[in-house]
Image (tube, rainbow, N blue to C red; front, side, top):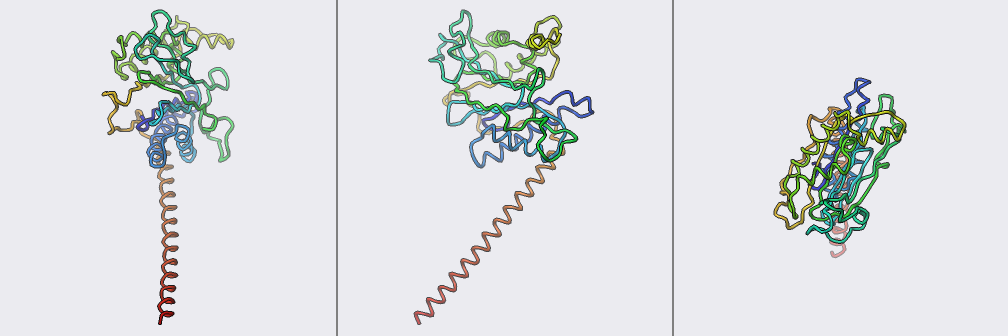
Length: 333
């Protein structure tokens, strides 16, 4: 939870282990930076995932922290019934919606997969209204934000920047379920199996039989179970075969899953106003803390210069006003 209307995930690229670098450090730093960017930007304007990601990436570049990560930030527009997202790489989200025939289902929404989802399919309670697009340079090589030990100050074309992010806006409805996750979920649980799992935890009607936390726990547990199963034909294995790579079974990987319910404003379950941002386990990297302290000092210095300049201008204006007043008094005599 990065802000009052924003959530996000980041997944460090595991191959950094080979160079003795903790892959989690960059991902953790990026989420801490995003949380702090939410706090700063909230004072200026409504939270935009693209702007938050850009501000967080800028801090990571100043920190010169080595590593790389995918990232997906999703926000609920507080004034419009839509999600906004910025995604780099193969983390992503699914928006699940109730099927036609449910009391909460109305006409298909523009900008979604409602019309093509086989609405009304026998036995289905949910369908996928939207899936975020993956960004891959090649098989198992996702877009990623990062920095290498030999990266200079100039842009490094081995990595992407926030300008490369996939930006989407998706209409939502009360009752929708948002599943945001790293590729550890999508590589091991296909969409039909995911729908089966979630539907099994839902009750009939517009309510749910499981909380978002319970849904997330169940989804992550199932993904972990399948990732260790060498007999399944996982989504990752199917994609590997499509790229002439021999792979059988699931793909062991880090798995992070966040689940959110889209609620009506009048719903009694509406989230409290006194929320607390959370940036996952672990402490922020010291390099990031140093970078943010440097930026804070620069910002304070700039504000002081501006205040000093305004003060000097005001003093000059007051001096002019004093001389003009003396001139008027002298003329009246």
